[in-house]
Length: 203
Image (cartoon, rainbow, N blue to C red; front, side):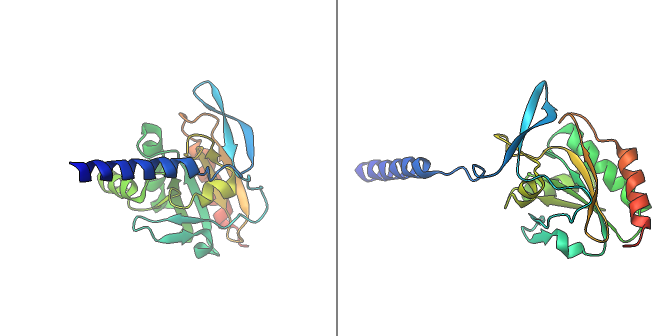
């Protein structure tokens, strides 16, 4: 009993020590109050916003095997990024399944990705259950690089703001739809029309 008590005390002290030195890794990120709302509350976004008609920042996210996937891996292709807070919510599930359905009608050189902060385990389970198999479902939970690089990380929530982005074959960010409410679906028709127009152009 004494040994168990000492062990529990040691673990407790270690946890207290760890919590005392815990660092907010987002503390140094630039922040801004956005027009996007969660319910009735305006949300604060962290990171540096990407700029339209400029080179899209490269980023690193994780696939369902925790392997790194970068935007630069798809150089020369048109890329649509469907950004969602969490696949565990109804709207995010609908958005992901909608773009998954649309992939078949797109040119072969178009890549569609869904990015969320769900863990790769959860993303894999979602894809199996919902039969999402035509687009890439990738996680920003491991490195947080995407949200920081595109200014889409929500302060004090650790999730991403809903958005649809298109990067053309030359690597420029040419379309950005920031959905005004976290509980609202994006304008799919507008995004897909832009995607088809952009993918038809040669860099």
